[in-house]
Length: 190
Image (cartoon, rainbow, N blue to C red):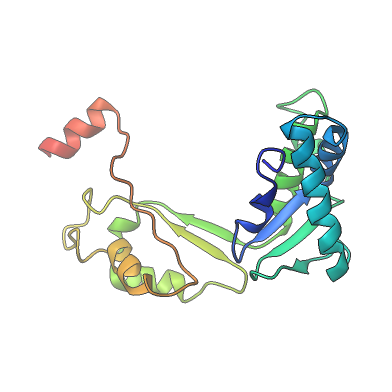
């Protein structure tokens, strides 16, 4: 991504951006190119050099927009990938870093079918979230299986409405979902 858009480092607002060392190696290998990729590699290098003034890149650096940047030098073990990938390419090394960090870092929970939760049930879940945890609620408010809920009174819609003005949350509404023809038929006629 950085070879195509060097400013992407700053586009993740208040999130933590982790750059695996394999990415730095890839950027370094492109700096001598005289094309756009080479120019972008040099620009990324200048950006990272300027951020070094704030501290070591392998420590967490707070950026001006509130986000955090760090270069990940550890977590390069390919052990989890050996079943899927035979070679240690840079792409596979990047995936390995992501998988290893996922195991170690913050708790992330994905709650599917949240449209079938009551307001009380979703409150019970959200009020027990620990520091640095992320909760993702998924669901379709028009596909409710609970006899006492509808598209306006379910837990998913309730949370989206209550949290919409708080910067700690985000809400994405998809206009169209993908279903098998059988699932769509069942939703339409049952």
